[in-house]
Image (cartoon, rainbow, N blue to C red; front, side, top):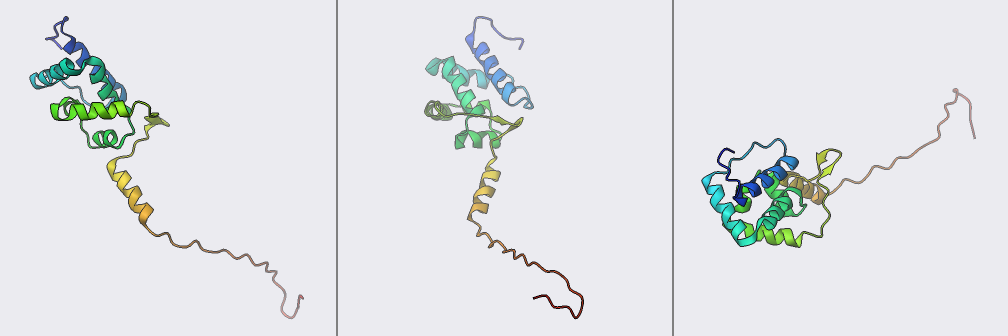
Amino acid sequence: MSDKPSDDPLFATWERMLDLRKKHQPKRRALKLTGTRKRALRARLKDHGEGEALRVVEWWLLSDHSTAVWLRSEGYDLDTLIRPANFDRYLGLAHADKHRTHNPKANGRAQHKSMRELLEDAREARQPKPPEAEVVVVDFTPTKEGEHHG
């Protein structure tokens, strides 16, 4: 960014947030630090500091908490995280979630399911399953006509 004042921590924090986002969501397009984003992030940094802002971003990217999974699956991004109406709630969830084990990648793919997949799984779990067919094995040895085996 061409307008980065080197002494303003806001720009360094934004870059760290983008680095985390790129690491875990490499196909997402880059975001510019617009005036609206500067104001929102500056207020979050003033109230909570860089560490807490990064904690929320990491929670959003890595947590298996249903809210974080939903935010990712619906395509929500950093703007939603730093919005004044949301940040404190997400920070609280990030703190409550800190002892959970996260494994965001399994076999190279994200293991988190989308909301649609979660709903399909729930619907399938409620469906009655048909009884399994019984298999009966009969030992049958063909005979020539007129022969009797007994």
